Image (cartoon, rainbow, N blue to C red; front, side, top):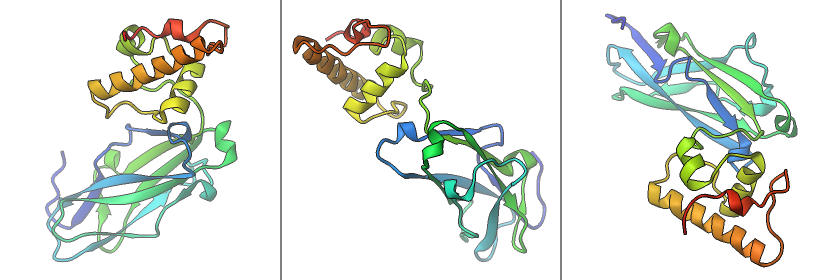
Length: 210
């Protein structure tokens, strides 16, 4: 890693390779989502706040200004080695059918310069589409929710109001999935089973016991 001997430099804690995928499908009922963008100070510690700016790269970005909100400037607060900027992503109807790119760069100001090139840019992919989440892995297939289908995922989210299980403990995941399975049992007992797109009974595809 390059060592800076003078001046003030800032860079994102995530590299440009860490593209962030944001689908409003995972945020039911929300019209906008605010994302935290942590930045790290490189070089000498300042004697006061440092003004910095984040700019949208129009050559790469396909998103329009109606899709996001980014303040004109930020202050990296004195005494901090890591501070946070915030980006707001807004939901619009066309996100249901189109994915937009948003590229944000650290700009040079009188106070700071961008640090390492690979940490001076963040890229976001924005839509409102259904995609198989990373947490739905082979273990989820075998022991919990069974094989992924879009219809199953939609029903799970409609019932539980949860679309992201990454931060859930094993106990919390198990409880949510058992509640979903019990809902499917109730629907079947009522004579209105929830079916997959191919006509099969969704309940029969849920492997979790209990």
